[in-house]
Image 1: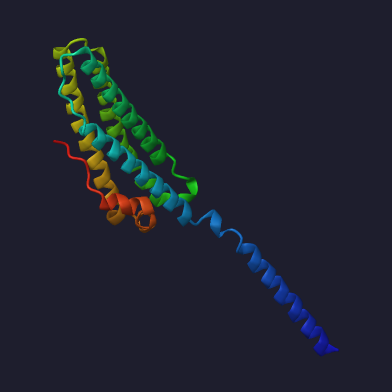
Image 2: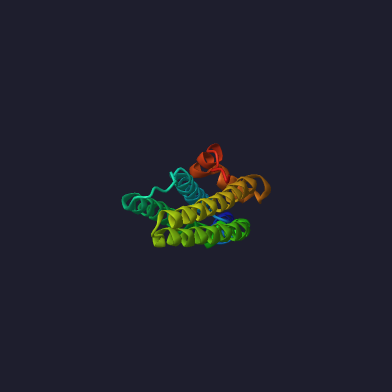
Length: 204
């Protein structure tokens, strides 16, 4: 009987230890950063950056030499309006992507987000200036005024391209100089791999 009681005591003690261990194993996800969340955020930032870079490059390919006819002026207005609207939309999408870092991504990702947010603000300010230049194009009512306004658009596009290039450079630096979880996230995100392989727009 003594042997039987000892076995029962050991069995009950073992079950208690197992239940205690199981209870403790349910909480690590509350403190450990989520790799999936970090990768998703990085992928969104890189995808938005690629879209903005393509929009700026598209704007730089516009033929901005005005002609004297009313039809030519209207065509210039339409082209500039459409390209600038696309660029502003891409810049807004970038801002949304950068600020949308999920809390579970971890402290290292949050620090990277703060650095990227500062550069994204610089991009946004240049794109706002591009919008102002586009307003000048819309208001131009002569070939001479249109010529002046288009020069402003060209200069604003160059400034925007410079800031987008700086943003892409910062993204690339992030993959090498940030914390391990950030490097892993940007390294695993498909959009970041494509962004790294795509040449940046020129600012000249």
